[in-house]
Amino acid sequence: QARLVESGGRLVEAGDSLRLSCTASGFRMQMYSMGWFRQAPGKEREFVAGVNFNGATTHYKDSVKGRFVVSRDNANNTAALQMNGLKPEDTGVYYCTADSVGLGYLAEGRSDVWGQGTQVTVSS
Image 1 (cartoon, rainbow, N blue to C red):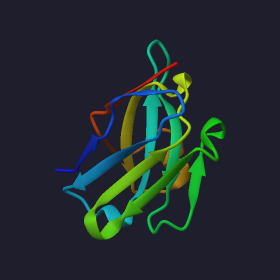
Image 2 (cartoon, rainbow, N blue to C red; image 1 turned 30 degrees about the vertical axis):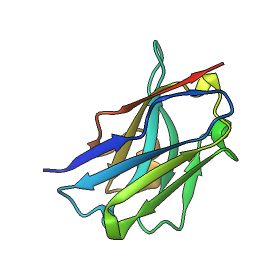
Image 3 (spheres, one colour; image 1 turned 180 degrees about the vertical axis):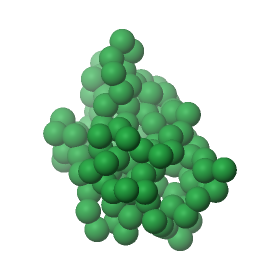
Image 4 (tube, one colour; image 1 turned 180 degrees about the horizontal axis):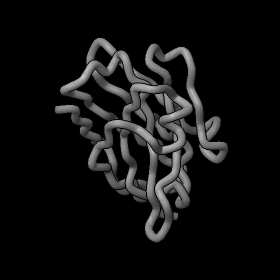
């Protein structure tokens, strides 16, 4: 059974850095694009960042460009989101996702596999 488990979310202050991790199991992660979405209270889930199957291509939400870095380690079946210069508006539940079609498909929220999410709270 395909499964994604996120970790690393916690309460931080504005300006801090945080690294989220995602561990994949039950499917061949190296064949999938990987990405991150987030959902703030009262808002729809939104795309944050994604990386294609071999790590050669990345895509980011405009508001996180230059602050967040998405990466993957196919040998260890993990993906990560390094978040720097965090702002209160980055607060939300962060979800790891994987898609077999491609990065564009993933960014549209049409992925095959989703994790349960990890809470990130940024205080001002």
